Length: 422
Image (tube, rainbow, N blue to C red; front, side, top):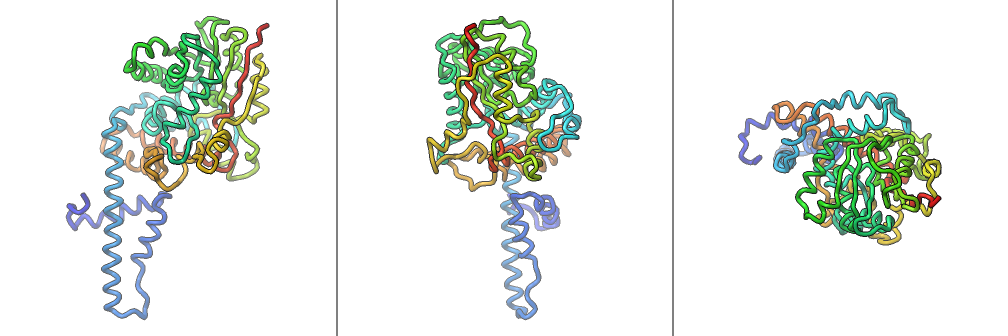
């Protein structure tokens, strides 16, 4: 494409570089470009300077062509995937959403009702999550040569194993998103799962996906619009199991949602909670940790993150007996050793490997999206809200994965609990 551009377009290249030099992924290229256009040494001959200048110009144009093709390719891929066309935040405004986190510093609680924040966040984030991550909005571990789908399957199969339920057992997926974990648990157990979510779009999208599956799957996957802090219309003492797949991160007082699960479960039924929690590596006085946590909370619509002991206390306060608990992500190191690909690695800068590459979530791709979408917004192809939302999503990805990299947080601390028989 770049080779077909007329020479007079060269005047636009400095503008392109001015947009790209601020991106971390192009920092090295920008530095190299600065070296390329630097004046030659005084003691060089004019002939040597002329030859060097030609090489510099050739290298400069080669980089510009690569960048042009890369940027256009990412934009076209987003359009082809339906992402740009289908993303409609509706009445949600990302600026108003961000105001909720205006006073948050470090691991502070935001200023609004948790369920309202979660609903608004997913109105903004659903399409970004599905485009970048798939239909299961959670993490996992895998061997570094394996695809992203393996980490998703590992976590879902672990939940299925710990629930200890069979065919047509009644199970709750509390905070179900668009139903990815629900469908995984159904495939593994045959259970009859009802997913609860505060977000109407998630129910619509979840039903669309499930409608494409077999009648056997459709008969076992159900959705209910609910505030998991106050569930209405479901039978008490009825369900054989319940699970949270990273979903309680949206509420500060988790005891409240755990009490709802307790009320709905049969005596003796199991609760499986995969929890966002701070670890021993979290230092609330460390400025880097504070900023990473602020980015995570804002960019993921999260509430204040508790410690392990605080979360265990909230489970017990709801009435449960804790059977076992440990950081599920540590199992990756136990199982795969040096070959483990940790949960946060896809979102941090790394050398792309086709065997494991999750391209839309790779920093060198997602960091470009706000600029690409900003251009598309200017020409009227997407709402103005979209590039701003992309920036918030990047903030969440960078903060969360950064916390994982420094050992300050886990998204899947496993708590296995049971409702007492009496």
